[in-house]
Image (cartoon, rainbow, N blue to C red; front, side):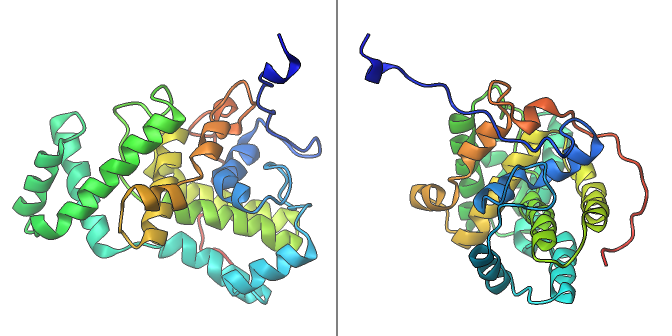
Length: 267
């Protein structure tokens, strides 16, 4: 066989030997994996973001409006509370969640729209959102794999996007000099406490993250083009759940054992 025809195995996920990969702290920082991958700043389990250079740091500060420690803490708190939510989207997802609980399965498109109408919503206005969310679910399932994003999983909330961003932003804040590792660990722990009750698995969290990202940046205008532009994180999702590639979501259990040190607001 010609050497050029060989297919090299995908590289394993890089980790830092200075930080844990298999305990509660690792599981907490792993919530930020997909967002950390959007701005490669070092191994996913390193809360110091050691590869975040000066230029990247300045760009992050401008992009996020975090020019001080106060700005940084405020943005993390905003992501953990406001969570990029839109009222109508939350209502539509809530209707499907309730219906799925009642039916014991994922509702069909028709059932979801009928339930929105029965709840007092406008079926016509809701239709683009409903078919858009279902489009995201199909595309992510196809790309990441049905063995990961199983048929019984569906988008129940869009909150994972903001929560994943909050974890990543915490690590970047260490690199920017806004906090030390001990404080960052505590902030990430608090984010984890807020996040865990809303999801049943890493795959559930990852699906919510991608859906939240796509919906936010497309402003709800879902089609193949918007998925291609804003849903490219599916490859990182697949990587995170790959045992062969040492993906953290494949190695760490959900839910993680959490020591309830504090559930206070961040900052």
